[in-house]
Length: 233
Length: 125
Length: 266
Image 1 (cartoon, helix red, strand yellow):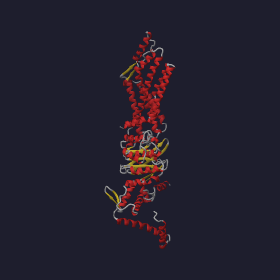
Image 2: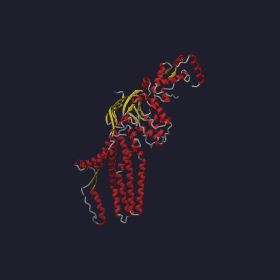
Image 3: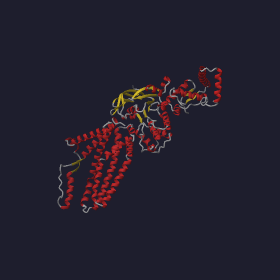
């Protein structure tokens, strides 16, 4: 279990009376890029937020990087939310220096480099940026944190194709493959498929398929989408 | 550089095909340096681990040589490339011939078809 | 230093509303000034609600500072900052406290100026002069009192908000309930000997001194006291009370920080 990045032991999560996750147990190994796929409302976001300590479990135990999860797992886990989560009164430049000061693991040079490559104006306020540029800055910040686990909740959703392509390239370029694990959740798998090492399929808050992506292709001649269809049938 | 991948086939093999085409056609010359693993990954939007595997596979076949601290290079051994070209041609031509024969084409007809096809596709890739 | 970065961020977060607050105060000051100059110096009494408003300053300002994080979805970013809840919350709290200090100071300065102006318009200057003197002598006690009381209302709203974000359903109610219950317990505790033992040190002001200052003035008018106030129960203001009150604030904040680290959901 020690080389496992994420361990869920009979975890449940209720929102009031509705149960989002019911008594699930699974492990996710460390290393590589992992896709968490499933339809809308399948519980992907809940699982990721539980992992990052941004939601509290109703029962069970969650261990990430060998530590029981609370909000303070933030020192090992960078969480990228689907929503615009940056302070809009800061300029891009200010957002990066703020990040430098509050994240001890932050590589500001890298962040500036990414933002400049993507041609985002450093002196504009976050609130004045286009939706696509806000997403670019957000991802630049997540990718510049030297943490063992990077979680991206629907990083592509609601963005136009150009931005999506940029983001996929940024991930390929800037993830520290040797010492980082990246989990990406998405409901449109085909776009990120070439990026993935491993795929996890979620349904009703449970992981019902966990496979190496190249294994699927080599042994079964299946794409992730094919495998999803087969399992969900 | 852009490659359209078929998600149901191993991506490392598709990427290798892509590089072999570049090498056989001469776009990548003998002894030329390949882009780094990371560069290739970014250019085609693929997981760096997958690119790594492609490079290793090409090394195993002797088509690519890794030089310590310098990167990966196309081999300078012409023989290897010749071999690769004939392997590729053999594989595809054999497949094609068997397929045509299974469909009842005679040797002459097959030759005719090939000639025609070559003429109409002049220079196009 | 990351706490400082957080503190500055909180100041920026509250900047716009704080500017509105300042503008409001200045406009009210001008209005009162006009009322006093044009109509009646007794309009000075209208400044009292300004002070009373500051009792609830921290309550609403903390509520707003926290609500902003959730309303603008920045809570996911804020809570992903790998600093203790204590640091995150105190940065917010101290930033709001800074605003309270500026706002309350400005209010006191305004009142002082208006008092001075109104004194000119009284036919008999004895009463206003007496007020100004009292204000100069004891105004700081009023300032500190309002300030500390406001700090207490601030932790109340912080606690309620933290519980509301920890318990999805009825969290508001639960948080409010706990606050009401523990306030009641605290009031009961204030009647005990233990509380007296903890707080009754460092005399700031004795009721008798205050009353004597009354007598002196009124004596000077008619030769004998016109007002006869009883020194009821030897009321004394202690430094100890302020210290215990502040410790209470720190204690509640600590509980809030714990909630933020362990229970609160983004």
